Amino acid sequence: MSSSTPPEIETPPTTGSGTKPLCLIVGLSGVTNGGKTTLSNKLAAHYPPGVVEILLLDDYFWTDTNKLDYLQEVKHWDFDKMGALNFDGFYRDVLAKIDKLTTSPNSSPPHILILDGFLLFNEPRLLAVCHLRYDFSLPYEVAKHRRETRFYDPPDVPGYFEAVAWPAYLKHSRDIEALKRQEGIVTIDGTEEGEKIFCRVLNDVECALSGR
Image (tube, rainbow, N blue to C red; front, side, top):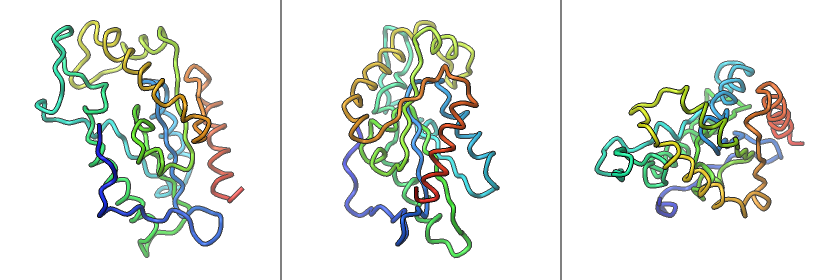
């Protein structure tokens, strides 16, 4: 589990004196292969270059296997628990990106920063920094099928999804269930048509950027 916010790090302002955000932060979390990265890329392609930045929590898995738990039952490292990720490093990079987008003299709004990660909202600091929050869900069979068609490095071993990834997803989903209403987390059905999901989120983004 990650530590609390380091006292020397202050969250940069993401809103100006009005109601329009200087940098709109969109959080995408939830089930593996639910459509988070596809949505991130579609949003980035919709806007002119430089408007949308994406930070992927998947880039912050510990590469030192001494920091990972090895599961004898599947003979593989556990990449689906909080401790498998460098949350402190990711959080620092998020704050640095916000600071760059909101203070650089060569940078002008609108700015959209998308945070994409399957455990994003299980980390309180990352949940708190997001303006818009979306949690993706999938039924077991769909998630399993999509997982089997995707390449992982290191690759999944037989039985990993059933024994580790899916039970971990259910646990992490339960852990944030009580937060969904109070924190405005919107559940996205990952089986819905991608264009429908995109249009829904795009509308929310446009409303937020305009201060509505």
